[in-house]
Picture 1 (cartoon, rainbow, N blue to C red):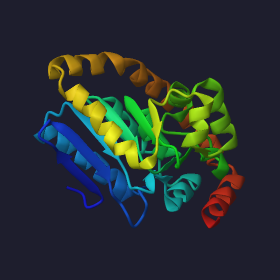
Picture 2 (cartoon, rainbow, N blue to C red; picture 1 turned 180 degrees about the horizontal axis):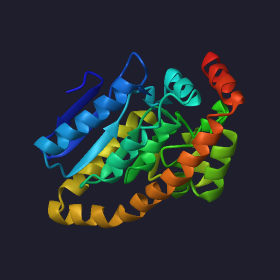
Picture 3 (spheres, one colour; picture 1 turned 120 degrees about the vertical axis):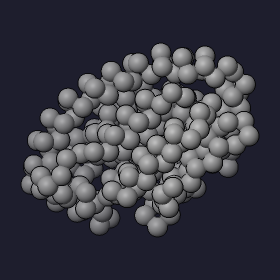
Picture 4 (cartoon, rainbow, N blue to C red; picture 1 turned 45 degrees about the vertical axis):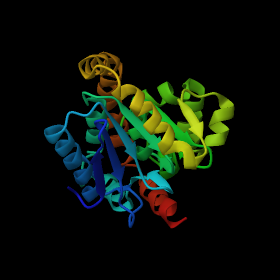
Length: 249
């Protein structure tokens, strides 16, 4: 298993995957993406879980892309590949519960969008910060964020890059399942997972297949739109300047 991931399947056949790159704060480095996908491979090859609890660090659930990757994208050296993580979560046979104790920004928030049930912390901040770095949202954000936040809050998040505290989102009435104190996030996730684990696993898998059909289509639509926007926005000279400025702050 990758050093930056921790996987455990408990006695109730509930899988717990903790993104655990402490040094880099769960940034989407090549090693992080590889570790995530390899751990998902291991989970699906060796276990048939009832459901998956996806968590991160206490301070950061997941932080999105790293600076060097974004600079390479703006220079046209590489193509976007973190959408693979989105597709992997949407295409699981079992439901995924995102337990976001810490902050989730950009692509890190998208991992929650690709989950089936989402729990956030009142103290942590969540945002689609792509435009703060000069380029348009990716990983399926443009088609998936509305489902979690509602159309108008999603639009505000994407246009402004604002990071909302969980407590703010609770007041606005989003579609997040639960927004609780940080200390209660994992316990709430486990409570929901235990309820799922009591059900017929074959029926659970069948329901997941049906409920995920819409997100699968939305990801296909997102790939067409976002790839086109990325080719344009990453080519703007201002984008590289904004990326450097963002990471210097």
